[in-house]
Length: 436
Image (cartoon, rainbow, N blue to C red):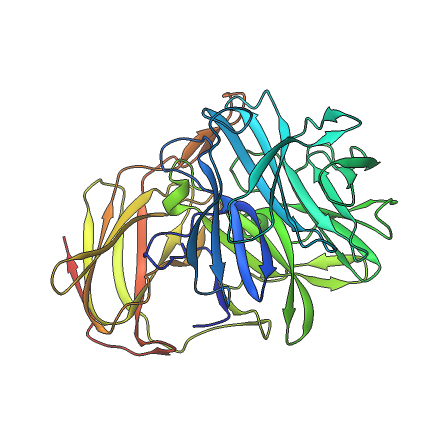
């Protein structure tokens, strides 16, 4: 379904593999959207490259390879960290500039790297550290922003704003410092005469209630306005990464882009949360969480489909259930919570050929119910989906190794499922559940 964004579930590319691009950015070049982000593994946290996906409609994604690969040596070489990648297009030259947080695996050697490309279809070439007065900018979490006059800016953790040179290749001035002590993952945008910066609190990959600052000019004065999502929702279980100005039928709408991290299975199980931001003067908010929405019309999207029961709640490895269905897509609904773990989803056709095998995360610090898995679009036919409790769960520690985050259980909790018979239409067709 074109122009429909589905939140909190893995997206799949042309190979039925999860879209693996996190803490990145969205850019439109030649009437096509490009999502560039961290290309994660399911084993450990280290840099292997930044991925690039293209889409005509933010619904269907094509993997285009690595926008920037692991380097042979240096600050983005083996056993290093590469994060928070942001890409800007210089207005007058159309050259693409990539800024990167580079670090060692202990986060004790931060740099901001610069890479360039003259063609979105080509790999970015590394140029070295970003310099200010001849010295590297030694910061970590980063965001970028291009103002209406084409001036580019770098935003970093703790609320530092730097003005970039005309070619975006270096820093020429420091605009503000320490606007948000304790803040990370900054994302900046402008709406008319007001500037906004979103920040997350420091809870590693755990979600928290993100907040924002606003100012009448980029030079300030900046005011902390508090939360932009309802308190206690933990920003709808996500962490801000970028704000993209969508051109919709209702004009330009700022779209919040956030990550639902899932360490260690970041490649297969981490998901995205993209939602429209409502702006009123110097105030912003995201009033509601939309599982699915039509971004062209900026409206939530629901389908009138009877949900069929699918009962499985277990933390025992090997416990499973299998659903047979006739259709072109299956949607699995269930619950996440602080005791949740991973489930393995194995989708096969009527010839018992495996179409997809992936893991789905049932953990969240606060309980949530809704869509957990939407299969790739399939040719109309007969299929079987097996869902098995893995006995694994998301768990990680902060950078000091002293604070534990993540699940304290292995539960997989399913409630019901739906089948799409053909694209754009839902219908009840051939439901059957087998308990294992």
